[in-house]
Structures are given as C-alpha cells and as structure tokens.
Image 1: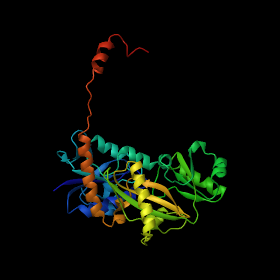
Image 2 (image 1 turned 30 degrees about the vertical axis):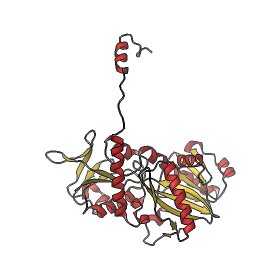
Image 3 (image 1 turned 45 degrees about the vertical axis):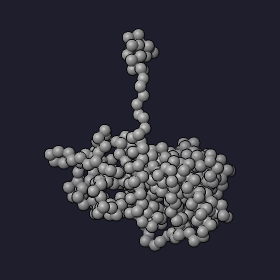
Image 4 (image 1 turned 60 degrees about the vertical axis):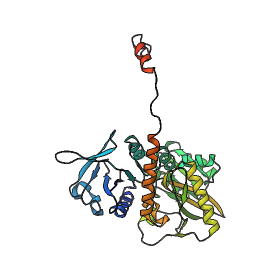
Length: 364
C-alpha cells in the first residue's frame, strides 16, 4: 500500500478552511493508502495523532488530540520523523497532499520545504504559488500576456494616495490585501469614509493593498484546471450566486448551494479556454481554481487559487478522482526533477583556496 502524507492547518487566517480540506482529503483516501495526517498549528508545530479525523480537537490540538506526536522533516532522506517515546518513527511518503490555504501554503512556502526535502508534492511549485498568491503580481503577468483583468491600482500601505485612487478608479471600488484569500479583509466601498475604514482593515493583514474597480451587475464564475505541466483538463465552470461579492460567510458558513453549473455551452467553452491560458501562463501544475467576473459579456480574470478549497473536487464531481490524479502528477514531476543536473565541475574552490593567502577575497 502506498504511503501518503496530508498536510493541513498552518499559521494563516485560512487555517480553519485548511483543516476542513485536509479532513475531506483524508476521509476520501484513508481506505486506499497508508495516510499520515500532519497538522500544523498556529505556532508552526507539525504534529499527528490517533484521532485526527475528529474536527473538535483542532480547537486546542495538543490538549484534545489522542496521543499527539511531533513530526519533523528529515531533509536528505525524503521522509518525515515522528517523535515517539523511545525512538523516532520514519515515514517516507510516495506523495504529499498539500491542503494548506493562505500564508505558508498558497504563497509557496510549503512547496519550498517539500522541494528541498525531495518529496513529491501536489501543489504548484514555489514560484507559481508565490505569483498566484500575490494579486498584484498575478495581474501584472496576465496583462503582459494580454489576458483580461479588472482595472486596479496597488500601493504599499504607507504610500496610499486616496485622491489618486478616486481619480483613476472612482467609486464603487474594492479594497483587497494583495496576499490573502477566502475574501478575508476585502470590502466594497462607495464613500470616502468606507474607503478609509476598508484600508485600515486591509492594512492589518498585509502591507500591500490592491484597489480594484467594482464591477456592478456582474456575474462570477469558478473553473478549476488540473495539469501535469503539459496537458490541461478543465472542470465544468460554475456560476456563483452572491450579492456584492462572494464573502467568507457565503463561502463557508452557509449550507445553501451558492453556485450552479454554467448551462451555456458557448460561455462554458469561453471560460475553460481562458482558465487554461491562465494556468499555462502562471505555470500551474496540480489543481488550481481560476475565479472570473463577467460584465456585459466581457470576461475578466479575478484571481487564481493555487491550493483551492476542497482541492476543487466539487467542480470536477469527485474529490477522490482529483486526488488520485494529483498523486500521479506529483510523482511524475519528482521523477523528472531527479533527472536534472544539479552539479557542475568547477575549479572555483581550488582557485579560491590558492588566493586566500593573498587576501584577494578578504580585502576590504
């Protein structure tokens, strides 16, 4: 039986959603694989336990978990070490399923750790994650490839020019932390007082703020893309039914369905085509979700989620099938990477050693 590690949680405002995704994944595959659940708490501790599927323990993990054990990355040996009483237990995964939304996950940090540990992992690489996580950089790259994005301005938090924002964009507008997800810290503003308050809130989450033209009477769509870097498979696009914009509460605190499949074949094709272009441009391997806005038949890329909620299994119709594909993509990528050359024969160290005595490299 193949071994899988599932990483979720983390120091992020999207921690709770990450836990939900992680538990959904574990429940889907626990009978098919030897699964090591790895929870990362708010302090950065990596741990596992015997009752990891009990969602109540994540209110206070080390107090409520049954036999919690610390987990460490064993760099150079492609494995994890589980801290036991008398000796550490080794766990070498065939792949790591990354379910960490937000900071330290979607920003590429976890991809960098797993890349250095030479483990197969399911999310896009560090660079792709980092680019997708920053809404401003995403827009800059997509605009460079002539892909449609909503008009916006970006400022560092200490350089915000409200008069310039109102002159170039005007009301209504949306204020967003550049590096955050799940609609946290996002606000629609129609007055200057609302703008001042929205900026204050956004600054609490990030020092880089995006000001975007709010498209009134627009429609919102989601489309996921599954890719091995060469081939791209798009899910059926879904239309989001929301007011103003898709809030955190609407996404996660309601049981009512807020999205439905796009019925128009022509519109579905248009969304899929643009979603695939976005995934290619941003070098997205694994599964990503592209969010769109449409006003007067004009389709715009809103943002790209490099580790989407529930891994977008609901968009493809089967989380389990998505996970199986992600595992194969992760293993294939690692296999390719092992064939790259990581050494270069050089006399640089010999030259440096010879020159040390002459202080060539130590002179100020």
